[in-house]
Length: 199
Image (cartoon, rainbow, N blue to C red; front, side, top):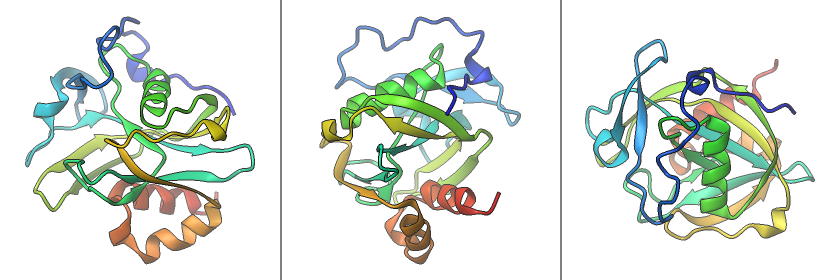
């Protein structure tokens, strides 16, 4: 696998607004986008998600161990949207000035205590809109990555983010997810279906 750079952040300053902030404080800014995926501003994460959520930049990661199993996570019941559903290994939002790969590394460590060894962007233009039962919409351009973790035995889930984890075979996941869409996040269902199509 090769490390890819997100062109949307290539000219942004390297300094991230998260530098030096306590991990538990996460009202950082997300990057707002136009319909072509160009950055047009930013907004605090606590203000951007509502019943008319503007298009913004995110990412999804599917983390694999050295045996080729993929890590699925179950969202904590305290999450504002889609609580208790199964989803991909890790999701998040790059802050302004932060390369997507750096955001993945940060969130994977914060949520699961895992380190990335290899990273590959497999769906660079993935985008979706979805409405949670609470009435909150997600509206994201969300590049999807496959990653290999350094040491799967280091896995420790942050309970405020993840209530359960499971390493599984990709083919088993690809078969199960479309059969029980209510049990999975809408973005992960769409991603798994797309990633499982013959290439």
